[in-house]
Image 1 (cartoon, rainbow, N blue to C red):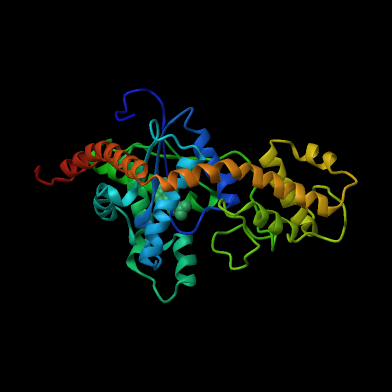
Image 2: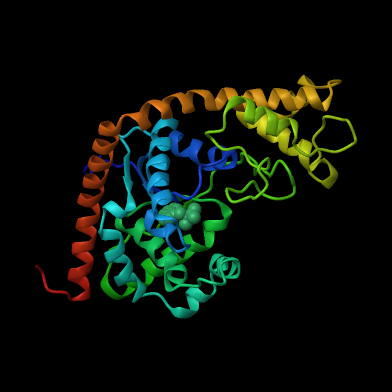
Length: 338
Ligand code: TRP
């Protein structure tokens, strides 16, 4: 896809290299990233520039960038087809972000819910990058004229802002940017915490048994499921409206997503069985699903040369496309050609 001359729609998405992705990230997003390669021209980025809006330990960050990149390959991102690159390898992102920041209003950024949340959570470090984070995200997307951006609900506001920035820029300078649309990933229901099933599974959950990392070993996965919080109703049934059943609902959703069975099929499979058997079965199904990813990951992370080549190739292809966009933008705003 080094050139965009076919009529496939373009997908762009980014993942922050902070913490190892968990089951919710996999079922909710990353699995779809892999599937979308069939139908679209996909561009995926490990967004290290975004990650430093929150203080990171440099050596840990470096490791996480390599880990995240390798995991995407291990999950089935095909680097021959898809452009998979590390954001920091392509200077166009930071460059376009500056220009776009001059087309973004202070008021717009002040309304971003994620900024408000994160500034509460990191009140000791409310830096300007945290504030302009969505502008960099807009640059990511607009550089490649992406048609669709697969995002979860929490990123919808950022995507809307990307559209607003693009519309404003186009209004002043002519049709430069494609207006990106949110690609709503169809319903694998939300994966909840195993310890507090009314809360979303989260990478940063402090409780060690709350979330399943893609790289957790089999016995760890099973142990976490065994400990997962359920109820005392002792009935494997699905009832979205019964908050008491949140734990069992969550396990049923997970089992259904992992095995491609419907919730009803899952319910009848376990009718008359106890929670213990059910938890074990869910744990085993998840462990089985991650096994090939983990094997492939181990192979890839050990192959430094392959990884370096992939990153290099991905960055070059990304730079080629985004370089054209940035040159055009510079011309339109009145910068001198160089
Ligand atoms: N903000 C996104 C997140 O935290 C990550 C991201 C950065 C992104 N740039 C992007 C997602 C561009 C989609 C498109 O999940």
